[in-house]
Length: 275
Image 1: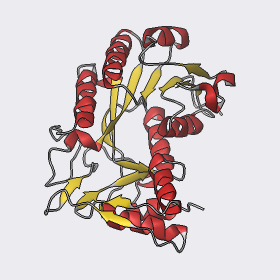
Image 2: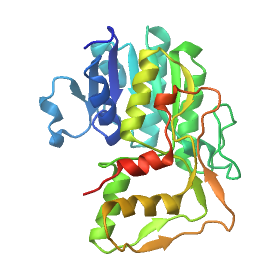
Image 3: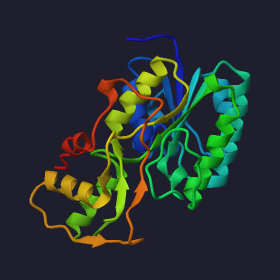
């Protein structure tokens, strides 16, 4: 069922989040993705194109596909990411196209005393957070209707790298790092994909914080998820980076999604059965 004639390109379409977005959107839109490694069978999928940020110019891909919507879920080499987004922004500015950029709560990691809202000033102490800020600032120079910044908290999901690492640690009897003083909000691949689908369908632009509407301590959240799995006795390594509670949470205030697309931390916990 095609919702309309939008043509979507997901950069990083073979990654955990990119692939979740592809699965959500491909039944409704003419959707394409990129892959970096062909070992997962993407080479035989006519909707997927090989793309190596460090070797390939994204312009060639854009000229070939001519998308109306580009979703950037790229990961990897930071200088290559910056160059790719410079070219993306240039393309979007000249064509009938909107860019959705998956950013991160880390753009606020220098502010630890409070959760962060859409129009708070960004400031980061981490290299990763600064990368995301640099790319966000490129998008903010585009006409408002052409850019959508999606800031994500920690993303979970049954096949997520975070959950896979936790499983591995449990099987290998290795410690799982938890941050008892860290207060976060969370999401998973399913909820995130539904929210992005809504934003694309409604032609939304601007800044969105796509996480749970409530907050949870990192340690409590991970303990609750592991409790869902079964009767394990995992080893927890409690990491205290500070004696005070600190926040790394992106809460929505101005740009709220409909009630059916809002969710709590508990709903994310309930979603996890790690078999």
